[in-house]
Length: 152
Image (cartoon, rainbow, N blue to C red):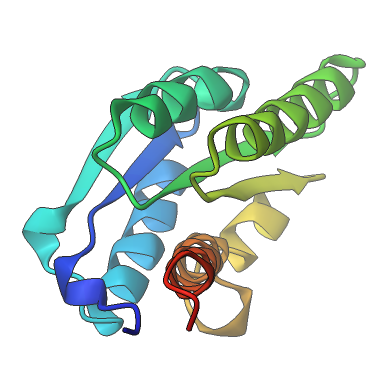
C-alpha cells in the first residue's frame, strides 16, 4: 500500500505577525498540497500570533489524531536585539519536539531572515518558496511514515 494524498488530512499553522508574509507562505503551502493531490477541504489552516506560538499549535493538531502532518509557517526578521535568536531557536526546537514526541510530521517553514527583502524572496514561488517546501516536507514524511507502518 502506498501513500495516497487524496485520503490524507493536513494542518497549516501560521504565525501571522507579518500578515502579508503569512499569506504568501500559506499560498505556497496550499499550492504544494493541491499539486500533490490533497483535496482543498482536507487542509485546515490555523493562525497564531507569531512563530513562538507555532509549537504549541502544532502539538494541539498532532495530538488531535486528525492530521497526517502539520506545516508550520511564519517569519522572524532580525532586529536590533537578541529577541530574534530566542524566537528562532525556540520555535525550531519546539516544532522538532512535537514531531519527535508525537510521530506526526511537522515541518519548519519559518523564515529566519535579516530583512523584509529576503523574506519576500523566500515566499515568492519557485525554488525559494518556503511555504511550498514546508508542505512538500510534510508530504514526504507522511508518505515515509505510512510506508514504514505498512512494511512497504
